[in-house]
Image 1 (cartoon, rainbow, N blue to C red):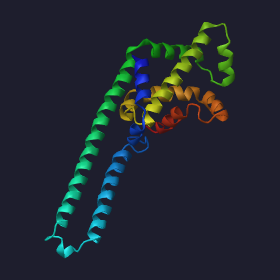
Image 2 (image 1 turned 45 degrees about the horizontal axis):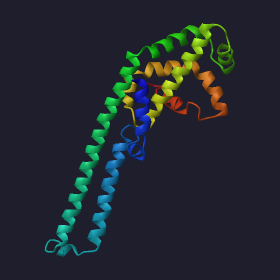
Image 3 (image 1 turned 180 degrees about the vertical axis):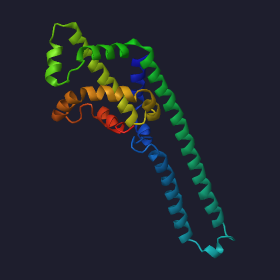
Image 4 (image 1 turned 60 degrees about the vertical axis):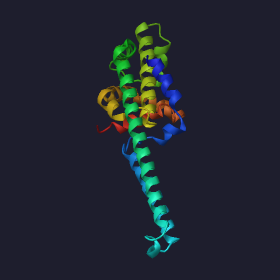
Length: 215
């Protein structure tokens, strides 16, 4: 089920979803931008129209119909925008709940977290330590590295979904925020070393963790 969810998000990523892109620093930004764009368009169009006709003749001329038609079209566009936003929001919320449910219902996440904790307990995770564990013959250390990679990749995927508007950040904050903060903080030394060579490594995970700093 989780793999199907991943593929579904990848398939749904499109320029249309970018239209609904939500900044995690300002969740209302998308809706405010839409309302502002519609209002600005309507205002500019109305001003341009009024500049080309005599206001005194407006009431007694067919130009009145043009003004009425303009605002009717604007109202229809606003209605379409709002209904599309609401539909997208509802779909996104359901999709997020499906992802969260898969995380709690499948043993892979819990096992990865248990292996991660068992192998790295009391240790500062660095590239050198990960390399040592990855080549060890101790199954506990090998499982710890495997669990760590599973967790950071999972949360990078979740973070991409949040930043690009595919997941409802409010639901993630209430269900996975603690896991996100714990895993990132535990791996922060290792992640920092990786990002020194390639700043894009786990960049979405890093951004979301920073967002949750004060929550």
